[in-house]
Image 1 (cartoon, one colour):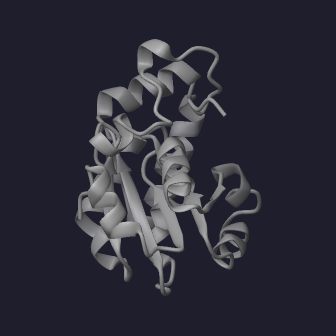
Image 2 (cartoon, rainbow, N blue to C red):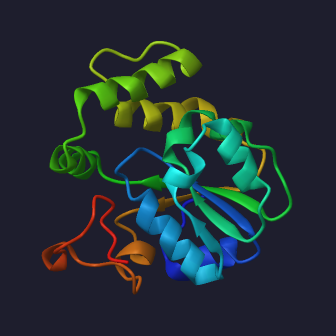
Length: 185
């Protein structure tokens, strides 16, 4: 279910005590996770915290209540997360060209890109000719993975009203001195 207006987000996620936010890297999972955590009074768990030792750190994070977890590196197997009361998954969508520009801006290397592709190929089979990691993640999510998730699943567009009009969002023209994650904390 698409959630693009603030009221839709509140209606759908107000009862969630664990929100897992995933999608392609550079799609906006960081800011969307921070926004959801702030909106619902949840502890924000950044991607680096759940990537520290792979799936074990994700399992530990899933044992914590009242959290919003940023986890794009686990997008390829997010469907393996067991359903639990008050748990939901949010997939962040962003225009492909914006993601590619962001990857270029931060110097996302071909090695990182290939690692992402390899992870998906090992899990889901060969990539289509010319696919980038962004393309594979979105294709697999929409055609094979989303329907395997056994809990509430929502999608939020980076370009949505919820994101663009949120008090934490900083317009592109005003972004100065940001870190790699595009958040001024």
